[in-house]
Image 1 (cartoon, rainbow, N blue to C red):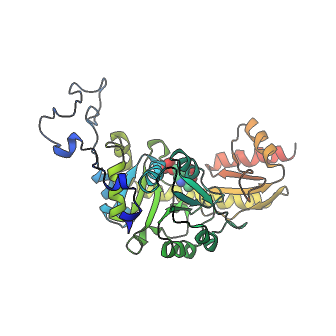
Image 2: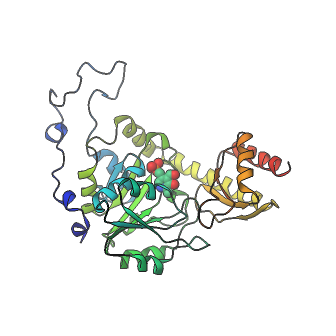
Image 3: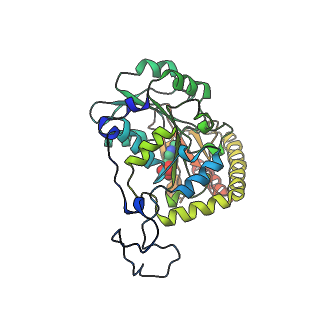
Length: 348
Ligand SMILES: Cc1ncc(COP(=O)(O)O)c(C=O)c1O
């Protein structure tokens, strides 16, 4: 079934064969690298290309998430995985995808870059999916449905039964973006790969792992889809410095867990405090490391906060998000400054 969804040119693509596909040891004079080395001391063999398929890192991720190596793709942020999915499944100028606004902006941007038509089925006012409406909107050209859970910018998780309904009824690929899953009380859909060959789960080291700077995104899917992603990606997409730091992170997962706990404690403290502020109409339930709240004159509050050096995100232009600001949970000190400046702005 997957093969029939894939674009003809990708199905028949002969992928680039890198020098490292043939040999990876010996006197390596096959890749036009510079054997004289980098212009500074380094311990990472930076004059050599990185491993094309990143087995060691993918093994670590697979073990951590309880899946197999063949279920794991690593990319330059989840943004690379999103782009690859369009390039693998969507014929430019012809095929469509469904997204559920308000949601993460890159799905639409990446679709547009790839000349893919975007059908938008709004979430309800409580930020829940509308699976019936989504299924009604499916056309023969609809190849992908993007679900974000926990959702950015609304912070809530969607109903997992709604996701299952789509996985069971949609004859294309359902992409579940779990960038914030480690902050969530919901279980990852990565555990459901065996049941749903049309499922792609996206995760990232940018959030709970605190490594946005190294650009490491992950896709979990059936071996068939992962194989297509491997075929289409740039041969050496993940660089050696990124791999080194990512491997180090998987040696320090106890610290990741401590940071998650601290962020969740802070999120609950800030939510409780915001709930007591008169001008704040609503603090939406959060299952992530940020809060969405509705406040009178949100745009003006946002600008005044920025003048005082506290930057939050104005989301008031998103559907169902009138007068909404999105606050990423910081350290206790940062959060206290935010609260202090917010009160200052509201009393001015
Ligand atoms: C829902 C969602 N998916 C993906 C990303 C991007 O992840 P990455 O840094 O891995 O590209 C973000 C970043 O804000 C996000 O909110």
